[in-house]
Image (cartoon, rainbow, N blue to C red; front, side, top):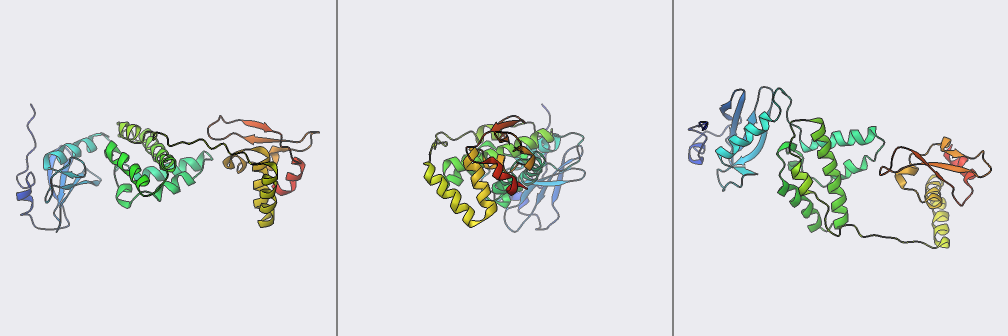
Length: 288
């Protein structure tokens, strides 16, 4: 059995609390090129892993409360976590990606693919700064599950919490694809599983006179807004599809005008034909 790396001044809380409070962390080499760093604070100290070009804090020390193995750790738990985090990417000197960086990359990917950046911007509103600073590779299933449950406890509908959870899941999955150090995807696959009964089908069909009244009121509000609502009403398309339309998609030179509608993100990259019941030729002026 390999010998454990010991540190007389860090491995127990009594010794740590005798250290002077300072900004510069105390360090112990736990493997070639890998150091466990402890910062002595006025309150509980913090554990970090230090490599050649980066330093990443990952937990509180059990100076004043018992360790839980996740947010509060003993020296031995911190030692193993530091090794795991540093060795997840042998030969990679970049700092491990944080949740905030993962969401930034997700937003950029959505923009590049023509998706809705709203999925990323809305997600940020429901994450604390502390959560966003967490390292993706160190996320635990329980903290992800508790985070989403917290959204519901604050009054959010389960379907909305599930939708925001899916955005976080997509951001973390993208981070794992881009950073091979993130080898364990189980925490968000299990922790952010779809909530039971979170999707309630809403098949509301408005009578024609109600739809017509909504379209007229939309034009009264603003011409462009009226055009948007008119197209949505005529085609039954998703808002994200209509936003991608260009004047070239309107084929008004035919006997029966047609509108070539981009598919939603759930479909493949192809155009589908819509033949609205209204006068499609009238859309030419608004689209231009």
